[in-house]
Length: 195
Image (cartoon, rainbow, N blue to C red):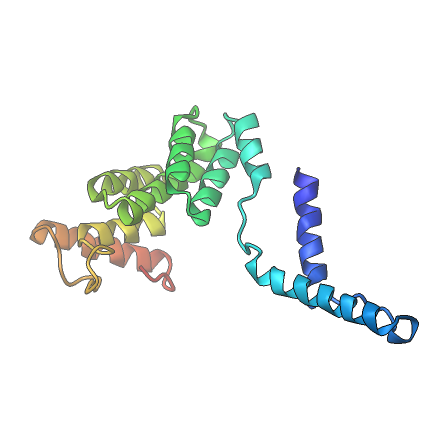
């Protein structure tokens, strides 16, 4: 199936602006008309071809190597990007259950951060998202995305359309101070980071 997907992609790119390139002088009018109609049908069909398709190979690898954290994590990210939020959550949670390995601590921090984003933005479960962001920071204290995401969560952002970082908070002064510290620290680590 993986080779078929690659061949499919190649076929799609070849078919854009499809033309048979048959010289008109060797065809009669009826054949020319049929060729043009076929070319038009192919070109009309392509915009309806899904541009973003899930990479099934990554999913098979995640199932074949269920103890390889980066593989399981990457598939969870693919599912999240594809819009399969429940599937992404399932694979993020599978990744969390994989035996801890020092070599994968940054990857595990990414797992918790992305699971937090999923619960924060898609499932509106801010308290669980906060736990995930904090666990990501425990694993990697320099995780800029976890810092800024936690700051946004503490302020009630993403659910509030008028959200401005640093202005409103669903908590008291203590959390506002934590938000400020998180955002300052994130910008110290990565001055170009935008929460």
